[in-house]
Image 1 (cartoon, protein in one colour):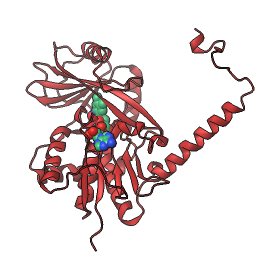
Image 2 (cartoon, helix red, strand yellow):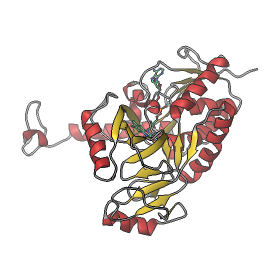
Image 3 (cartoon, protein in one colour):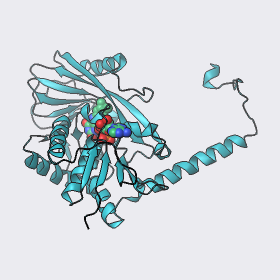
Image 4 (cartoon, protein in one colour):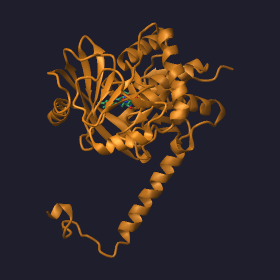
Length: 357
Ligand SMILES: Cc1cc2nc3c(=O)[nH]c(=O)nc-3n(C[C@H](O)[C@H](O)[C@H](O)COP(=O)(O)OP(=O)(O)OC[C@H]3O[C@@H](n4cnc5c(N)ncnc54)[C@H](O)[C@@H]3O)c2cc1C
């Protein structure tokens, strides 16, 4: 008997990569999307083995990186669309402390910058980080949607009792079924800027990134704001990015576009995957924060393996465990509030609390 199809809800980076991986492993799939905001259509699509100011290897790098190197080139050739671009990053060091930390962390991925220095102020030097690049996510999503439609796999909403994998991005934080995962949403602004005369042979990183996209244009990003719950471009975000670039680049630039999106950040800051504890035919695949391009292909393999065999999802990302922990934390918090010896009555402002200042 043919097994029933798996329904993937949401066709951002997470849903698209999961559906493709499931399909490659021989599962029948149906995919739907409500056409709402998608941070994958705003994201620069960068991946890098080393992250943060201290150039630390990403969580899951050893497992995720080989899958990334296999997945996107294979997808590119099967879709016949150019999406995968490998490119070194020129990391511009901004402080003596950064220099010191990077010196200790030089590795197979990061060495001194030996090419002609690009026109940035760099009193603490530059390093070359290898092994990174970017994926053209809008082009990937458009081509995959077309393929799903041609195969008759693009569908309406899930039907009851269908095995359904929810890949809603930031919208999951508003879904009663998945709210207990525990979410933080990180709003991000990104600009497109024109910089005549800047070489497009590298990605530049000076705590913000500049990604060359051709014709003298670069994506400049990104901001992190934890208090804005809608994906609207913020003037403050644009100013932050323009100021950061102006303080470092020694060439004039012009802003030609401004976009914004919401990153889905699950509380432990690693993705979340697997079934719901009370509704086992509902699964989640989400929480990719700023690392979707690197982590989603590997996590999709793990999730499809779990669908087929019941095992394979890394335990720190497993949905049942994450939901239970979050519920326990919430119970403890409520218990502590109920037993507090100094209850704060409604309307009463505690001395020295931020709202009293
Ligand atoms: C400014 C910015 C820059 C970034 N840069 C990078 C980067 O360089 N590299 C990187 O790896 N990551 C980056 N990210 C993060 C990246 O965008 C996310 O990790 C990733 O896009 C999340 O993908 P997703 O599929 O989970 O969510 P989304 O892309 O938001 O997709 C969710 C989809 O689900 C649909 N949906 C939601 N609810 C429903 C429903 N009930 N029914 C049907 N459909 C539904 C939505 O319409 C949407 O299409 C960036 C993010 C921002 C904001």
